Image (cartoon, rainbow, N blue to C red; front, side, top):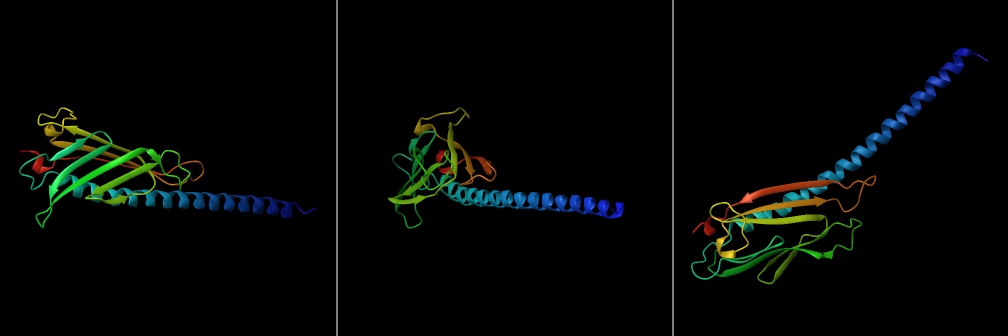
Length: 181
């Protein structure tokens, strides 16, 4: 048997195996990047709603209660719209309502309810935590003392890729001007 032919077959086989391994890694990396992009886009969409709404908490309310309810999973407040009408807006993360359409066991429903119109942010929300602060920066759950909010949001992909869920995290402090007075 020719030694050059055997050596060529071995080297060729090793190169073929290396190419398959590179192709597998590229495919895996591409799948995970796609899941990461989807979760980041979902976080961006939800956070646009949150920052828009929460900054307007109490706007235009001159008498009565501005903040109706403040818990770690629910924030309900009043505000005046551009047309002069008042709105009640409630954000609620329902941990007793798992998402049945996904295989992720940790995601639950996040709702925005504005004057009876409900927006369901779908699947992937695995954490939505609200913390409230009073005028001196201490945490509070007393609605009349709320001056600032900290919002934490974690979104995971609906399905894992190689048993791993893609995850995006967002946290910010929001100080609604109308609650400062």
